[in-house]
Image (cartoon, rainbow, N blue to C red):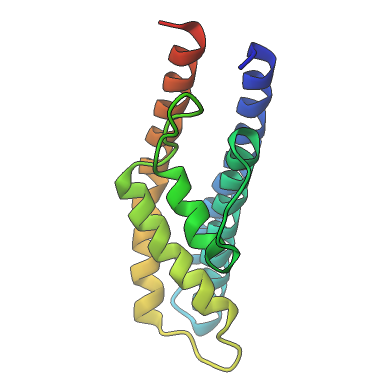
Length: 157
């Protein structure tokens, strides 16, 4: 992998992580209120958070391997792909802890998208919110480890 492509990948990932951080800022803001409207907004932002992470995973997948066999399980397969390294291609992007937290967020996103006539359960929103807050710090460590490993492989160290 040439250095220019690695720089481009880093720029794309940094741009997407800024999008993720913008959503986290909205979550911080929405979490201060306990009204039904605020809870619904919090649910919407949690939905958006997973979508932003998935966009990040698409960037990485497209850069390195860009295919998923079972289209009916696209979202869960894309997430799993980020948790394992592919020998001579790329290191894992996510730790097991991040993958588990993101899988909970993915399940919520699926529920949220299909909950057209349901009232959101505030207790469940707060559980997902807590997982999202745990993820906030963990994914940053994963991101740093990913680029350290890429750089190490690129430099041949």
